[in-house]
Length: 326
Image (tube, rainbow, N blue to C red; front, side, top):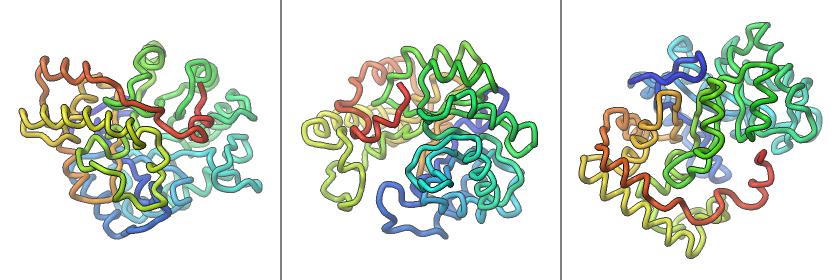
């Protein structure tokens, strides 16, 4: 597996997102912790060195699974996790809190569940409007000085916030949604990251599963699947977005790749400072995604992919969009 660089942190250029191992799309139906553990261990066998999670996933379950899976193999992988979407002072899961005191509590819990004494990349999950980003960055800087954290990351942060945080504690990576159907970061965020030497970790590089080509209707989703409330999966937006998938499938067929592999291969053409984290809890899907490292796109195919219309509809519902720093 080739390498990407997030600041001075080297990781496999395709990682593994562990959100769905905790049932985040639904309230937990169909979970199989043993299969999730097999998926993580198989990923390491295939050269994946970047596992991404967060305390809110579950909450806590995803970190616990990773801790079990990495027993005896901690040195093979860079662990990224996130704080700030669980308030440990009474607000509980889903409450944004990046106060220094909350970060102190959060990191100890994550270290325990992950079975490690350090976290390679520690992200603020969402920007806290009630805590100055300088205070949050300073708290993480203290953890870095103590050796509990090695690198600082931000998730869904605006350009202004990135600059302010970076001035206090160098930011190694920004995590934000990016794929063939979500490309708004290209205008301002990516140029800023490259100016500052910050790496980029795209989450949902397969469009919440749509770019795999496996979804043709939302009728099969469980009632509690949050994608049923996502504007891109509703009505005319969904029908329009399937056209993007059809073109992705056609290009993949030309090179013997699946739609998912083709979508990931396109992201990998964007630079060696970009390391997507496609998420899955199944060995088969992880093997498919990881194989995108070997997919080569021609110049013409890249141009065709880049000419596709971005997705119709906002990328989250109104409540989730409100939590994003813009």
